[in-house]
Length: 358
Ligand code: A2P
Image (cartoon, rainbow, N blue to C red):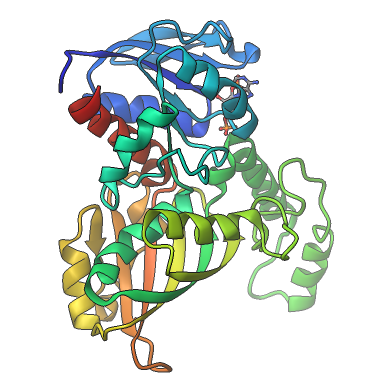
């Protein structure tokens, strides 16, 4: 650490990720000399606690970054598109949690346990991108296996928590779940037809955040659909994995929103050049930074969102051989999407910046 403390701004401080960023800065004792909390004009006048003291939330403007050395951005892509360059111009190093800059060649895309050396490239634009939440937890698990056996191809399906969409989505899910649970008065002694008829009135439901009801439903739709019929979330997993880990890895992805609160789950199928047995994979994964192996199926011990939520580590389990090919593995990986998937990863980047570069 070259300095005693830094002036740090959190953009989107009132949001799900922004809130967690403030929390992680405090919990990890990041050297903050002064904290600047920024959000929309709607939040101006509110206060948020940092280290036991109330700090005002200010409206984000062009002048917000005077003297700010590190800016943690999490207020959406369009806000980053406009304000990250303004902050960078003012001398602030931006760590951006949105997708806006991730694939730009002169912007490093960093998971500290995987490619910390990439941080040095921040000087080109004064911007570092935090990868997509589903990519971060996947590359954490892929890295030690790639180093050992060279991954050729990855087939991933995600089961992503509603908190990834933000607070509005969490509220929408709870309101829908409450309404359904109280309206469908069904017990196991009733006929299934009664359940069907109760459910039928919720087949279409007015929604604000998602295009369909999320309570008791799985939506194979995260972010927008692209011309190739994949969603942008799916393609982010492809592009970002290749940028962070290795452009030669083939990745195909299906991303699904499921009605869980915190913690994304992923079913990951890996094909390697060199054979890695499940025993060896277990060994490699248990030594890798940021991961915890949770793989005792006989005791019903495997990664769950309830175990990963609120934790810094990413859980890996259900480690099995893919018996349909010569060199294949299957994994189940769960991580707190707001923590390692967003706020923690951003603060870890800030720690390396402060320690080695600023
Ligand atoms: P605000 O609370 O004032 O709307 P989430 O992803 O949990 O919904 O949070 C989004 C975050 O982005 C919030 O902190 C929100 O602030 C912030 N935000 C949204 N629009 C703007 C804007 N135009 N300028 C600054 N911050 C914004």
